[in-house]
Amino acid sequence: MIVVLLILLASVIVSIVAFIAYKKQNNPQRIMREGKLLKSEMVSINGEQLYVEKVRFKDWHVSIHSFYVISDELAEGHTVVEQRWNYDDFCNITVRLEDYTYMLIRQVDAVALVRSFRPIPIDEFDSIAQPLIL
Image (cartoon, rainbow, N blue to C red):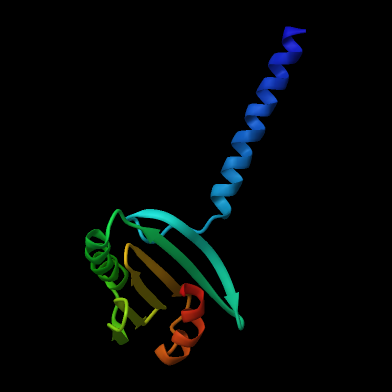
């Protein structure tokens, strides 16, 4: 009887570990290391594969600082082909690099990112990415 229970317990533990490993493998790799992760998903719009990520910070001061740190990290080692800054209500930037395009928006105490997997002109990318963040 005890042997059966031990085998059952071992199979449950193996199943849980396999399920956790499967879930971690299918989740996209987190890009923004700062803040608490709120959202991380792959989205397909008009045939474009996009990665959307949102992180929250303890207050708006940390959010502002982290926005610039994240922006620098995303462009580090890449050639900036085109970029657009916008300071209306929130601080945001859209950048096209030689490898991909990304939009980074600071929303008070959070920062949201939309990243493509190929370079897309900024005007076209903004129209695709803006609805995913707001």
